Image 1 (cartoon, rainbow over the protein chains, first blue to last red):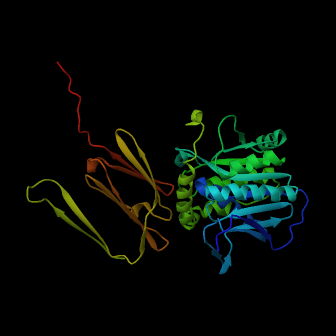
Image 2 (cartoon, each protein chain N blue to C red; image 1 turned 30 degrees about the vertical axis):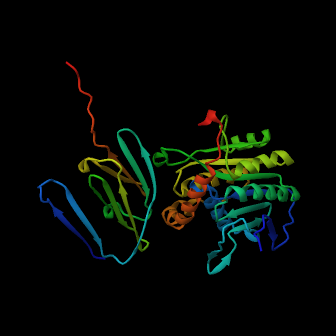
Image 3 (cartoon, one colour; image 1 turned 90 degrees about the vertical axis):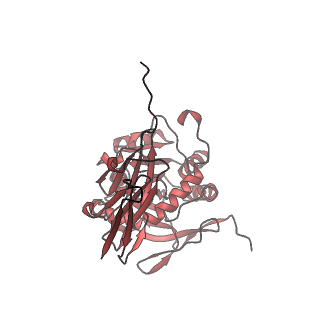
Amino acid sequence: MNPSDDILIIENKKIDVENPIIIEGVPDIGLVGSIAVSHMVAEQNFEEVGYIKSDLFPPVMVVHDRKVLNPVRIFQKEKLIAILSEIPIDPKAGFILSKRLTEWYKEKDAQLIISISGTPIQERIDIDEPQVFGTSNNEEILKKMEESGVQILQEGFISGFYALILKNSIEIGLNSSILLAQCYSSYPDPGAAASILKILNKMADLNVDVKQLIEQAEDLKVNYRALMEQTNASIQRESKVDVPTMYR
Amino acid sequence: MIRRYYIIKGNANNSFRETYWHINYCSCNNVEPLTEFNESKEALIATMDMPCVEKEKIEVTSEENCIRVFAPTTKGFCFKRDINLPFSTDPEKVLATFKKGILVIEIPKKVKHYKIEIK
């Protein structure tokens, strides 16, 4: 039997919420998205409501608190839906997953998609409070982001999985935004994840306490080391995609 | 944890080359730290992510063509990395700093060519 290119979104519990806000945390630079979303769902007691499966994903299952779990899971709390991946998404899987996810967001009539990532900075070691940059395809959301303390990107480019989410969102009429915290390029960065969560607290009326995240930063860096190593390898494969000459 | 070093100084032609055998008797597993390199004309800068490590317990040894890093963590494993240099360095000029769980090693390249001023 050949592996299939399908991506299936399985809802263990029917997700029936009007105009949800979707928060995405997929491993990429600094693992900012994965760390932020993982902390948010644990700290705010989100309920696990589903998972995503595909033959395009690496053959990995994760174990947390003695439970064997799918590595790409869906969580919900009231109007918020969180997508958390604990495996790096390779380019081929990324193309199909981004398309399937945005279609699913459309079915759910999502009011906003917030993708969380990082932007590497050489001087990160000297920065105590990383700044958060962002962009969106909706002017009103850009204003709200600015009010929440996000520095809006004036020029630049987004690449990788979240670029596809943004592209597909524009095509099918969804409001999408990306938050990028200053981070280390090759190391897990809980400090950058904390900066993002402070912004999310304002943007999505959350109340995530980041104190524990900062206090346990060293432990988290040890726990996320293997995922960071796999993600760095995945980013290197992805970086073979040409970026526009003016940004090189 | 018992760790020992055997250092043999000098060789037949009495050069200053030193050879270090770093014998690690600790029972923990060695793990390579996540590492980044930045190279310029003058130096190679290696940064290593080493969480759960105490500055006092980090050991960095430098040779002309190799930098060795070893650090036990509080989590029951050790970070270990040997960097084989594609150039020669002056071992005594290698600098290392540790801040926020990140070790930065600045490895200057030995100058081999001088521009001679013509008088």
